[in-house]
Length: 224
Image 1: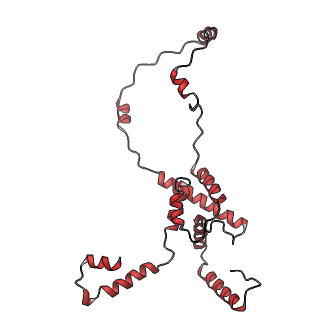
Image 2 (image 1 turned 120 degrees about the horizontal axis):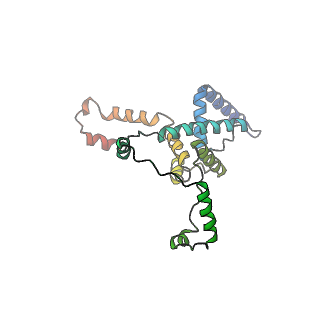
């Protein structure tokens, strides 16, 4: 809404009026923060070009923290004791384990094993030697996963204004699972109350004192 040198006096007056009206409407900091996070999750406006770099980073950091908390709430499930744990708790302790061999005996066995030729690979080892995983990376936290998804998401180009953001998230749900959950939570909120007001207005015109005997199927077909 910044004024350009090529704008006419009428265009400048319209921009000034719109800007003044918007500043009066969005004075609450929480509401403004929510709207900025919603714009970040919208693939059409995710670049946030109207903010400076520091403000843009604050929005990203705030959304990261909310996503980690949001994912933690979804991961909390009620854990009930299993049958195996109950059986193990009621089972009396078994006999003590045998003692380990001494260090000298183990060293002698290792020396004797070194003299033997190397054993041949079994068929299972030959078959899966290339895909066998010997090291597993430690699991990442929700904050780290979200950070990786956010970096990849922001590196992509923004989609055009005619595209549907919810449809875009549906297509990229497997690529950004955490971000997709947050996008559905934010972008699924109606921007205005106009659709609901239209339903009540239409219902007031259809259901009246003179048409109080209409059946439900007739009402449903009127709104569809």
